[in-house]
Amino acid sequence: MTKKLENTLEKEIPTENNTNIDHSCSTNENKSDINHSVHSKKHFYILLVCIIFFILILLIIFNTVFALFNMGNNKIISGIKINGIDISDLSTQEASLKLSEQLSAKLENPLTLSYQDYQTTIVPSEDFDAHYDFSSIIEEAYLIGRSGNIFKSNFQIISSFLFSRELDVDLQYNNEKLSNIINNISLEIPGLIKQPSYYIENNELIILKGKEGVSLLYDETQNLIISTLEDISSSYSISLPVESAMPAGIDIQKIYNEVHTEPKNAYIVKDPFELNLGSSGVDFAITFEEIDSLLQEQKDEYVIPLKIIEPEIGIDDLGDEIFIDTLSTYSTKYDVSNKNRSTNVELATAKLNNVVILPGQTFSYNQTVGERTIKNGFKEASIYTSSGIEYGLGGGICQVSSTLYNTVLEANLDIVERKNHRYSVTYVPLGKDATVAYGSIDFKFKNTRKYPIKLIASAKNGVVNISIKGIKEEIEYDVTISAQKLQTTPFETKYINDNSLPVGTQVVKQYGYYGYKYETYKILSLNGAVVSKTLISTDIYTPLTKIIRVGTKQ
Image (cartoon, rainbow, N blue to C red; front, side, top):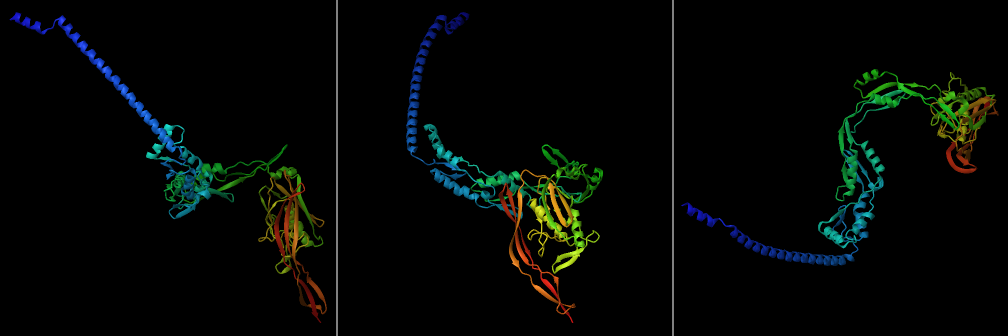
């Protein structure tokens, strides 16, 4: 049994020699397969190279033919759009015209902006200089497919034709003007939020409580306006975007920091000359604790008293060092024998003397001289009224106001308020007078110079003299006041019977004055050359009737 099994195993297990023979046969077969595979791959690569070469040749031929076909095309290629407007197959001039008709024309029409009942319109081209510059974008559109590289150009042409290409031209505008428009709208919309605010009046700080409301969304409004203009298909109206808002609380510390100022002394620097006018200080007249208690009350308005703190050294304390130059002077004569009138003239002149007017300040004659009353020292003298010449308190002070008027004119200051007399006067040339009446007619002028001015006024020995002192500036014009008579109207004579006079006797009760019309000009000259000639007034003087008393007593 064992011997039989061993014989069987010997047949099944190959010997070393048998194994070698089998391997040798296998190797020969593999080599044959490998050679066949290499040969097949070589043919495949050759075929692939041929195909690729053939395709490249076709592409070159196609691109060359395609390029030659489009070489003569001087229009924008197909599929090009600017801001959604198709400009395919158009020349640059045609494209510019089309864009202008559809985009630029839109800028000439009113754009409506609204919120609830509020509505306003703006014309973009006029109100904030909105416009398009098509030249560069059309040039860019024209150059698509004309890059100089055949393959790139053809790709752009085919790509634009199949998928289209969108270009955008930016809207150009004046951002500052548009901002001002939006800011103005933000103050006009209904239901606007009111933030706390304050103002100063009569040495009192008035704080206004805020109120809930809406506020305009500035950035969104601007973006809506611009996008609406740039989108050719959009509606030409905009609903203004707003948001609900609550007012901020009253920040009393912030208000105090803005209101509170320390007094500043006036001073002079002599080399080079500089004048600092100084200023008054402002402070709260009550404590913060009192203010906090006041703000706890439910009010729409809170009043906080202020105290004004004067500087230790003011303009008046600097003396005549700041009034070193005589800017102008003017004189008129009066009758010293007329005691009442002379008193009024001298009193009014004294009120003007040494009055200082700061830069930008307006001078009032009535406020400075005061009300013409017996208590204030004024006496009765002849005055003009609507019915003629009568006696009244303060007669003569118009000579002082007229003298001052001419002094102010020659100093080249601005006249704020001035009126000529009803009838002609004799103490100044006609067209150069200034009448006043307390409570109704005033003479006012404004110091438009860089530095303060001072009035130096006197009335003695029958002469009213007024000068304006100050500091000369770099440019000082020579001033000439020229009054031209345009018309003369004769006066009428009226006779009235007087039983207190003997028959045949005539006495003049009121002398007659002619009526006139004058134009007055201010002529400014510099170095002998006329710079300007300005009409400053046209004055009409009514004729004053001459009245003669005729005696009827037998």
